[in-house]
Amino acid sequence: MTVMWQDEMSVGNVKVDNDHKYLISIINTIEAGMDCDVSCEALSAYVSQLFDYSYKHFQREEKYQAEIDYPERNGHKKEHADLMEQIKQIHDDFQNSAYDTDSSGACELKTPHLVHFLREWLMTHFSNEDVKMKKYFTASKLKAVKS
Image (cartoon, rainbow, N blue to C red; front, side, top):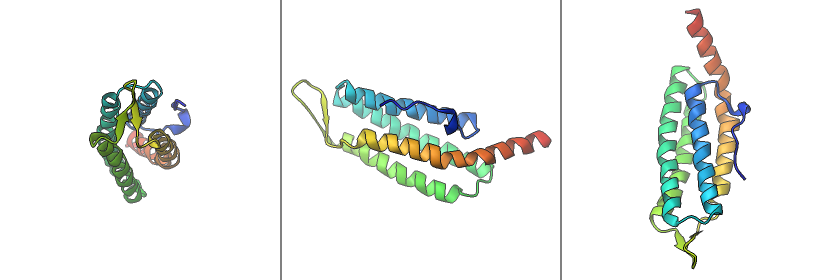
């Protein structure tokens, strides 16, 4: 099931929102690839892209959290570290052949929870955690306008 961007996911920062939209597209690509029986090499490349972009996104988001003095940034940073560890494990599984190729050449994952995990992470983290930053981004914009 494709994940679609919803306005309720917005954190009030265009760059963070665009990162989230891009992460959604990567996750949707992984799911579509699995549904279409793409090669393990292709899925591995998509997972590598997710790993690399998630790392960059988390760094960027944490920088913005410091700039807006987000009070929950330490807990949020810990959650990012935990998520990166899980994504790293998935990435490493692919790199270490955590999949087999069936007779048709399609990828058979030994980690079938992949799409479920990614979708849950996306919806839970973006919608429940990241959205909490919205009022701080809004307040930061108001301060900038008043200055």
